[in-house]
Length: 357
Ligand code: TYM
Image (cartoon, rainbow, N blue to C red; front, side):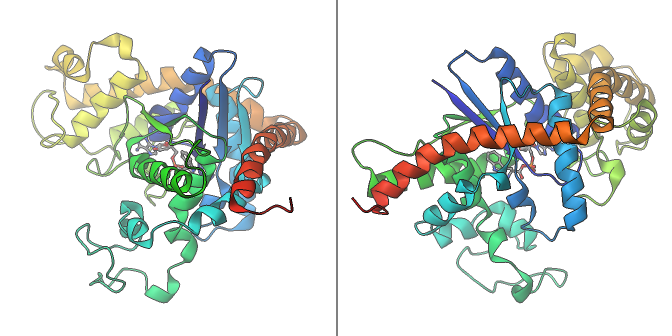
């Protein structure tokens, strides 16, 4: 039977990219799941601390993320929803996998290179390649950021996951997880694969772009809050952010990500919010071709509000409710996750020789 796992960092309320690229898909998979399927969704706080976090802020963000996951429609009766740090086997498996993870492979990861401000073409094994003056200094670079993908691989492999629903920016990390699983099996469990190389499920809205810099992906870490719409934004905030989104000065509406990134992103957002309104983004564009950009932005704002209004209301009611009830959901999720994690870790320990018998 399928085991579905995915994760999200508790670094703020999710934005439309997280929602369309991942969370909505998580809910769809949950609602369509056969009784024998297992779904696990983790709030990955161990990943969040690869960059400096204020503890009080992180505590708040964990709560906000759990409330967000419930608000989008995840149901703790059907999905195991938990915080990664509450299940210690993630860190244990990560250590074990890291003893066999290739430094060369890790240094080629685009996320690592971009956090270092390395050019994409930098040679992977050059430990001191030419870097821009704004790049962090080598002593300030942390080991955890480098080994981030190993922890992500551990998250997935710990539950013998078969499918991982994510946005496109995670594809490379999943490729790495498959590689880690295969090489572990090859060494320690050659006859019956103990770890399972997972399949990626990419959502159709795999890459939603920033509203203010539409050639970059919409991101929680962009300091400009106008670059993203949060799933908790009010109608008024949604329409202000869309009004100030960057488009262009061409007439009419057309769909071309390289020549009209801003307009094409708005079309994508509108289309993927409700795929029943047209047969494709291109078709939607054709329906709108004579519309002004101002009118398009108003239409998109309306569509966003319609689609996320319920999420916003549920979020407010969960956050306004009993804090203890939220903690209970987290604890119960962690208990169920740990039960499964222990099974895999037990088998891993055995093949490594960590036993007395
Ligand atoms: P994170 O927290 O950055 O993002 C959570 C999910 O949202 C997707 N996403 C997007 N999709 C489309 N357009 C965008 N602009 C956009 N921005 C984010 C991401 O692809 C992701 O699916 N490393 C992961 C968390 C993680 C994980 C895992 C995921 C840790 N362990 C194991 C899967 C399996 C991350 O930082 O996601």
